[in-house]
Length: 93
Image 1 (tube, one colour):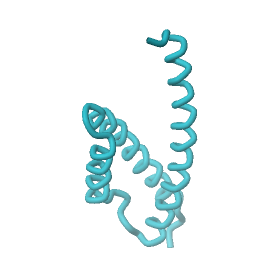
Image 2: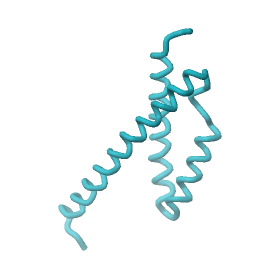
Image 3: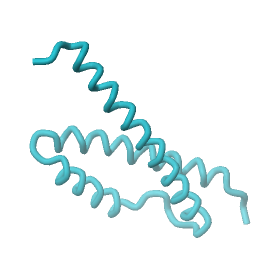
Image 4: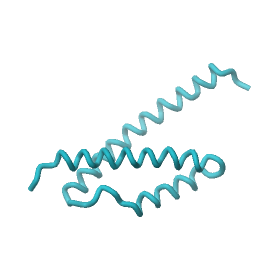
């Protein structure tokens, strides 16, 4: 078994990749928010979120499904907030 320092280095490495992907995801979320704001579409697409959470559970599988779903629920909530910020900054037509 690896020692705790080695395991923590592994976590740090994974975290660097996760942060890079989360930053890219936020860029896309903002583009979607602008698209929705321009077309006056609602921020929340409940069906899409449920579809996404089901897909996450399938991808994660096994005992990781609950863990990954919980993380994605937070990601989706943060994404909605980012889109709401875009709505708030859009000028009225």
